Length: 382
Image 1 (cartoon, rainbow, N blue to C red):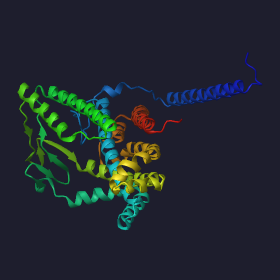
Image 2 (cartoon, rainbow, N blue to C red):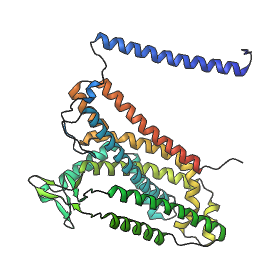
Image 3 (cartoon, rainbow, N blue to C red):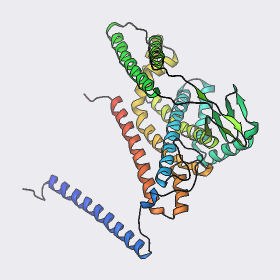
């Protein structure tokens, strides 16, 4: 029998009351919003998402036209947001680790340069950096007809970078899946190499056998299936290039801005993680003949990861959400597509709710992956 005098009973009662209060609050809020919308003659309806959008986007990873639906337009913005987030996370991580290691080093010049970079990125608004770089890019790069050429196949203008693309043919998916299977075999071999070294102390060759194996599988399967690889090259036609692929200047500027901005934040986290490791660890590594870079890679950074990963996860979430500043330079991310759709349909509630759920799903996936890696690297309690 539950008694109020027991601590466990009181705890369950308080938690139940809190949950009931939260549910009641949301219920009252939803009823209030619904009544106000009904009084204003506004009815929530998501059916318009499957009607023709009537507008174009400047960059799309899938086929899209003004005749496509609003839901497809939002999917285009979702894919652009995912791609930009991934590129920025990789770029910010590489910059953050490099400058963080420099900041923690005893090299005066490297530490000073890293300090200047970190403080600059921490104390400037990212939107200001974005607009400055975008204006400089637009004004300094040539027009399409006078685009810079690299190796005769790459073209750079103030509109985009144009590059050759592989023409997809039959059986290419089979080649791709076979190469993925070969990479899985390489991963298994890598684990065996590490296990063999732990048992015997001897190194087995890894890099060149792996490259030879994957390359052999690729060429063998391509030859058996008769796959001929050809490329579609961009060519100037009228006022723009036709054929090949392109990456807009907006994407480049956004990726560079968010990478250097959040790279400064991550660099400070890396510095803190490195300095949290006992100096004796580094001194012992140097005493057995390891260089500074080997000491960082093999001794210090693996231990510092346990301190660095949780706050870096917050930076990754911030990067994902900060891609929305692409609206300022006309990049077709999720927020930009949502904003254009609202202007055409006058359906802000529906479109904002869909966009909110999409961002929430992306951030939850990122958070789950970071937490899983954090659990993998943390020390088990005795």
